[in-house]
Amino acid sequence: MTDNLSAEKRFLDIEENLKEINYRIAEAAVKSGRRREEIRLMAVTKTVEPMYINHALRNGVNLIGENKVQELLSKLDFISPADVEKHLIGHLQSNKVRKVMDAVQMIESVDSLTLAAEISRQAVARGRDMDVLLEVNIGMETSKTGLRTDALNETAAAISSLPGIRIVGLMAVPPMTDDEKLQRRYFSEARRLFEDLGMLHSERVRPQILSLGMSADYEAAILEGSNLVRIGSALFGERRY
Ligand SMILES: *Cc1c(COP(=O)(O)O)cnc(C)c1O
Image (tube, rainbow, N blue to C red):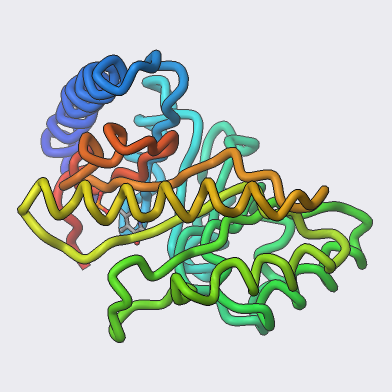
């Protein structure tokens, strides 16, 4: 049973956190010569119970991101409004594509041609297009998924010949560091790769979304051109697994 008092407290925390995040996004947007409305906030909801997710949705959040297909599906019946935009942001195995296709508007974590080919197949079978971001492994970390930076253009070109799938941008999770200079260097590298994608001049490659920045580094990401920040713990509190 949920303790009413602590739930109440957590609701208030979420409201406070949201105000603070929105304020900081607005500040960083202005510093980067843009308006607040040009930066999208995603609430990252892994490990968060639907009652708290819904509280964020009542307070202006209009996009949520989940890492795992199973967790996303298990929450779907409890999310309100049910039609809120949802993105998958975690590593996806090809054999789970079928399950997630109807649950999300975007897959931000496309990291192989094999995965893209399965998304294409499933999209064609449904007579729809699926929007995706390519995930790039900016720090070339062996512990992380994501396309190698030097394979990005080639993979994007190959994916662009597949029906039913549209590359609408790039997502990255750079190495963890407190060094803001280094954070910004990684983000600017992602920005450069994002701009390069546009050079492919393909109808199926329309880079518009640069998904960069999490709780610890979203301002640095915005300063380097991010227009979608994915925020979990700064909004909902530390995750308890
Ligand atoms: C968990 C996660 C986030 C959010 O992380 P926080 O540091 O809690 O904001 C963003 N993006 C991805 C891909 C994640 O897995």
